[in-house]
Length: 390
Image 1 (cartoon, rainbow, N blue to C red):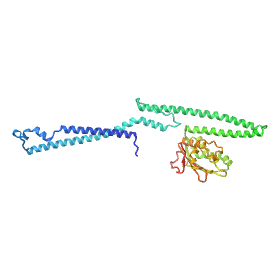
Image 2: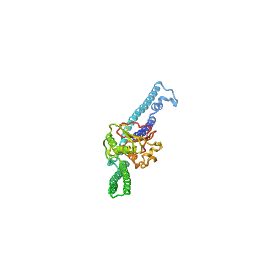
Image 3: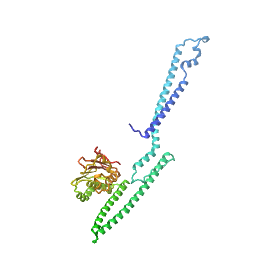
Image 4: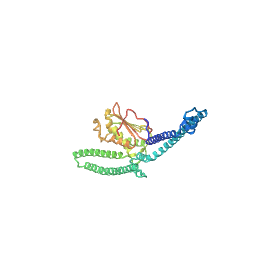
């Protein structure tokens, strides 16, 4: 079904109403002219009564000259009516065209504030919440709508600023005690007089502390990415992936997993820290939720921008959408040491970069994750991929 804009609909409505009124006026004009113009016979009778009646009021037959006069008057009357209808019709069409053009212009002027509101809303983002409409004009409904929209943006900007300050403060307040605890435990374990029981307890506390640090770090990154991007810079994705893979060698050796890569140059506009976290989480997730002797394949290119394939347990298809929810892990992988935020952070980072992510379960086990990031060439995603719910 063809979608008409509000401006087009208003123009059509105005034009139809104008033409309808014009047709009514034309009909009224026609009836008035027809009623004013006399009938030929009556006109001749009124003009020459002695010619049409005999002595004593007895009617006589009209002469040929009289018949010609009546015919001439009838032709004149018909010609006058035709001329009136033709000129009125042409004038109505011309006026209708002018009315349509005027309606199009007037509708555009009336709807201009709505277009300004729409354009402002489309340009809004976490990095551009300072945009406002500031509509000038009379205090009508449209100005009230624009002022309401500006007020809503003021409240949103205030809420985003509060969240930014909260995340910054939480980052410091939560990390500092954990760092202090880790230092105290390490100092206690380094004491030569520490008993074996104390060392075992210290080792357990260090593992617990490390897991708490990962959880807090994940929550802070998730909160940051959910706020959107404060700015975008060119990020060489291939370079970021290479650095991440170098840093994952130790984790891969610990889990007896082999990493292979296919890296092609690719630059995207975004936040380098968040994009690095995206690749780190994908690779760490692929290593941890794997099996001894398994493999991880990492690809960077145009489409998809990032693809990570790993071996591992068979994942049920119905469990795939839940992998992107916070703290949602498969039962068979719940003891892998992860916090359950890895793919949630990935989805949030992808969404902040206006991208998309899809996942498919491999028949032999493991997952196939694909990330599309603009300004990559727009290509259709594999139909087998299940999009993450955003």
